[in-house]
Image 1 (cartoon, one colour):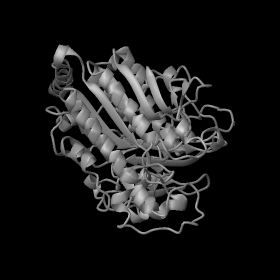
Image 2 (cartoon, one colour; image 1 turned 135 degrees about the horizontal axis):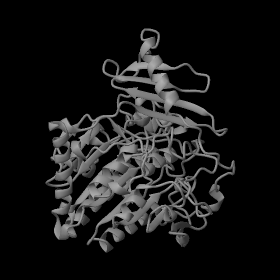
Image 3 (cartoon, one colour; image 1 turned 30 degrees about the vertical axis):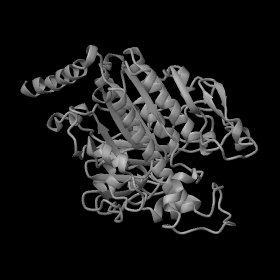
Image 4 (tube, rainbow, N blue to C red; image 1 turned 45 degrees about the horizontal axis):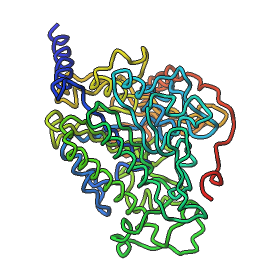
Length: 472
């Protein structure tokens, strides 16, 4: 009985904290999602070559998580788990590719918050439906969307248009492959405008910025401080995804720096508007660092995954362990850390609880609220029995799976691959597969994986728009 009362006490504290602000309204929510920013790319998680003072300061003013995961190892499904509160065994979008999107019956966190009276705006990369589908953001609970709906379009920083709700927002200066108007800057400007216009709140500003996702290019004011510090590449380097100078390493560092500057500008804006005390700020990333042709930069040189194994596209720790920090002055203890084991499906119930909107949550979600942890009541925090991830292929077969239960983690990296088993307490870098030594543990985790999977919704095998539709 005492435990029940203590839990109710935390819920009452949450409601009172939210209602205690001006006018009795709930807090504003600012959720910043970087793109392919690895856990090792920022200073507060160990980065030493790139300066990230604003992100580090954000962590210092709030709570930094040490075991927080994305919902998937690539972009679109990660966003799907964040928006729906469902892990990848249940969420609608389970990989990039095909023409995967949300349907009308899918419920997003934006829809939940909108029912609670929030103004909802998204700025950046959506990836869960283009204007010809029901999954487009402005049909999924967002009052305003500015940026890119298509995964492919979000690859480019000098396109000739962006999307403003369902209309094209021209960037005519970039026609003819000109590099004049940096799209990330325009997205950021529109996000700042939205926050200013809705300062009387409450608002939900979802900022899935594209930095530092490829292509490797940034305005020179961000690149210049690193040009003489890092290696150069040959101008004739044939690798794809890069159209900048021979300063590819400096370009990447500059992209991270530009993202950091944007975080600083957002925090300054909250203070200028007098709303920082009533705004909860989240910062995280969608998956680990980019592998492939430029792995030497994204992963190796800048230690993008820190000491962890893997990168984007992997269900090893380096592919899904993310930077995660949350700031709410006076409510979340500054300089605190948490080893709460959570992931993207937890975002929906957490935001709903802060907003006083839990009654609008779908009846079945996989996430749990971590409000007790954020408010300093970790002893009353509900914990996951296990975490589950999967990835579906272009034939919609399950091609990758992973399960974490306690310190045990099982990973299957291909359709015909054998399951691997790791003890994260003893082997956090996943170097030693102990499946043969602990067959009983592996059997239990495989059973959890089988029980967690439902078939992915069938989607048309239609290609997304190509680069020719976005850059000319």
